[in-house]
Image (cartoon, rainbow, N blue to C red):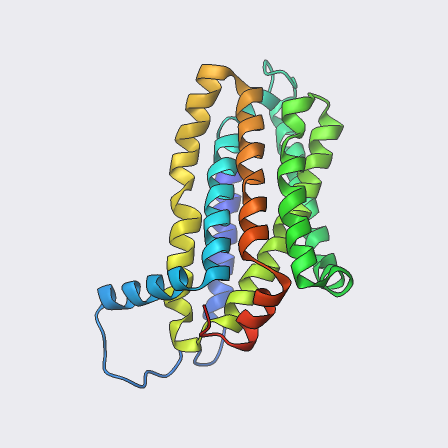
Amino acid sequence: AVALAASAGAYLLAAGALALLVGQFRPARTGPRTRLRTDVAEGLRYLVGHRVLRTLAVCVGLSNLANTALFAVFALYVVDPGPMGLSERGFGLLLTAAAAGSLVGSAIVTRAERVLGRWGALMLSALVFPISLAAPAITTAPWAVAAGLIVTGIAGVVWNVITVSLRQRTVPDHLLGRVNSAYRLLAWGSMPLGAFLGGVLADTWGLRTTFAVAAGINLLCMPLLLANVTRENLTDSEVAPAAT
């Protein structure tokens, strides 16, 4: 109950902070008012027609499917009588490792882009993410699983900062909301399927197999990214937003 109340309170604080923002952030409408269905279709068309953004959306959808499958059954693996044998409090502390990694990721993402380049940082985060997620499939050592979660948190934030800022720089202002909605439909729409998949895999083949499959699905993103997102078209996307 305390955890749920704290989460609800955090959402209320966030809503209050948003309410304090001053200014008009909606792009001015230059044409006639359109229907919602038309707006949704326009966002989908732009996303599907943009090679880089389309690939990133598919990869995020695959990744979220896999991650939800993993975390849907993660507590069964971690909490006693699961293989790791931790207490409920220990489970909570273990999850803070990912949060700590996220803080580190937000602190180093600018430097990572400067040292590796935007493309290099993006590809490294996509490669490291599934490898670190595979830790519970290999070991029950809490320190090793925690280390994997820290790396996962770092890689996830680096990926998010780069891809979200790319959309903001690439998509025309009047289409940004529509394209973001289409992108998140692909990115988040896979999550319920992932939870179902995690339950089926764990029940049929066991928890460690579920984690290995989740890491493998994440790893499928690498050939997709390497084939469709190059240094050149990543740069071209920002220079010419309308290009596909």
